[in-house]
Image (cartoon, rainbow, N blue to C red):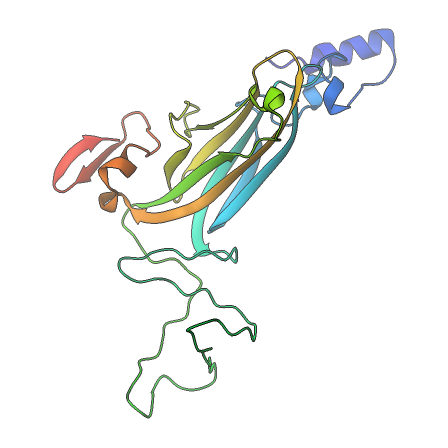
Length: 239
C-alpha cells in the first residue's frame, strides 16, 4: 500500500520535516523513504558479467523497515574480472593476470598481441581470445546465497536471507539456477521485534550451463516459473 499521500498530508497539517534515519522510519511514519522495503518496491541491480558477488550489509527491524528486497536483473554476456574460472564442456577458460608472479609447477606465458595467427614451428594453434561467454541454447547461471552472520548468535538467529524467483515466489534452497537473461530477488528479513544487523553475500556465476546439461540435483534448483516447460533428452517436463 502506498501511504505517501497520507504522510505528506500529515506533514502539511502539523508541520515539521520528515525523519529519514533508517532506524527510525517506522516510528516517524516515514517508511516511504526506506530502500527496498517490499518485494513490489525493491532495490534494482543489473548483472552483465559473471562471476559477480553482491555484498549486503546493514540493519533491518524494529524502528525501521523489517525487510530488504533486492531485484537482480540478468543480462549475462561476458566474464567479469572477479578471478574465478568457469568449466566449459571439458575445458577451462583462462584467467589472465598481468603480473610477473611465478607459480610453482607453471611457466609464465608470453602473449604476443601483434603476431599473426600462424605459428612458424607448427607446434601450436592460436587461441581465440574473447571476454564473451560461449553460446548455449538455454543458458542458466548458478547463484549461491550465503548468510555470513555477525558472530553474534542472539542477532543471527533472527535474521533470515532468502532467494525468490522472478515471479516473487520463495525458492526452497540457498542455491538456484536462473536463466542468463532472467531475474530473481534476494530478501533479508528480521524475524523478531528488535533491530538486527545482517551480512549476506550472493555469488552470481557459480556455474554456467545449458538447461539440458544440468544434473537431476541441479535441475531441482532451477527457479520454477508457472507454465515454464523444458525438453530434456527428448522428454518434456515442467521446471
